[in-house]
Length: 255
Ligand SMILES: NC(=O)c1ccc[n+]([C@@H]2O[C@H](COP(=O)([O-])OP(=O)(O)OC[C@H]3O[C@@H](n4cnc5c(N)ncnc54)[C@H](O)[C@@H]3O)[C@@H](O)[C@H]2O)c1
Image (cartoon, rainbow, N blue to C red):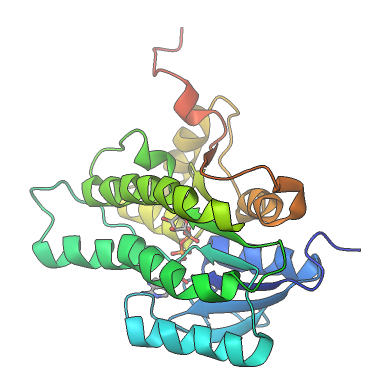
């Protein structure tokens, strides 16, 4: 018996590094999974990923409505929405163009708003299992250098998560956010590639964590799976940080 038997789930960014791991775990736990993404390859490429591909641009309201209409026509309900679509822009505010600012907010924040808004009528048809899981970041609490717009979007997702939980938990829809630290996905690999010697950078990133490692998509999928399951029936409105202890420590000289 799986933790998500007979559940219907939509995972945006479901062909990305984290989203793909979430789709795999959900399927393994017995859910029917739709991976909403811009393309079937997503950020990872390759073949045979888990879940049915649902073409979806989270910034396009008509496309979002069409995707949920397809789920409604097939299943009449939705149990789980995971908002994992996201992008990162490595700039200070001074070097961020208005177009870049609007684009990152359109995907990371407006996308979460649009998918959640149009999923709500279907989530209300879930029989006691409705759960929305947004993607924040430890960067929504503390800042990394040259990630200004990204940090701002994640702070917005954190506040939105709490607001959605206040409004919709009373009708049985739990809303939480997962806030990862460094996770080994194409997003992190492109950060390594753009910032110098990959091996020494990877080691430096490991060393800065109290656990001396960074996360894998599977680590994140484990938490998302728990939040989506009935074991988390008492969990709503919270920002679940999963970062190897990174945000717990003050940076100090190692003696
Ligand atoms: N990787 C990390 O270190 C890390 C850390 C903290 C938070 N996060 C967050 O986790 C989430 C997943 O990140 P990831 O590392 O898997 O990134 P990723 O780049 O591997 O995957 C993101 C996916 O989102 C999709 N996407 C982009 N724009 C979209 C749109 N308009 N509509 C639909 N899909 C779209 C991409 O095609 C891609 O498949 C993001 O919200 C990210 O901000 C990641």
